[in-house]
Length: 250
Image (cartoon, rainbow, N blue to C red):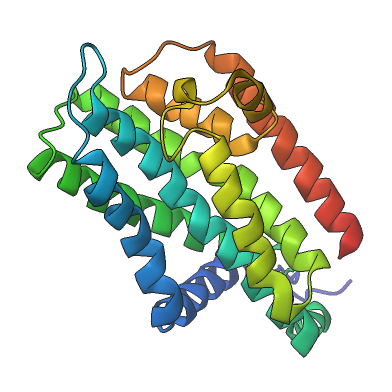
């Protein structure tokens, strides 16, 4: 009878962690991605949110803190997956990783982690600006809840970016992302309150994932009351649909 020791598989978490760290290093070495991702929402909030006066019960500085926070965290998720994935797919980098010993989900989880990190940074920067320059004051629980909503709310847009990156060509992927990102933000009520828009556009917003994340953000900051489970269910549905279509395309 053999006394040879049984072979055990090495733990996978160091591989996932190493891929995540490599993804972060690669991303932060790209100022063309980092600077717009961080400065775009801050600039929008400084130009519009801080200059919006209080009108009755409408607190413009807090309202736009929530909506531009939503708009800000969506960007890195879409561009980090959409444009970057399309370039890597056409360059053959994805095929190389598929035939390597790297676990299949390591690249996907690393990129999701990168989007979550950017969401945290954007939330912290916007929170600082809103607190110092905008005089926004929320209960500690509201700050934490809003941060949680914004960070986890990036996941549906990671799935949408994955779908764009799996279908678009490298040269056109960034254009497609902008074509989706900017109009979706405006039509979802993230640039200005949705109640100022025509009724038909208010109804159209319900079909957009950014609208549902924006509603949850506004509710978390105490600006509106919503039926939370409906918006969460819609975001989960969008995530499943986008991820399923992307899996077929890849």
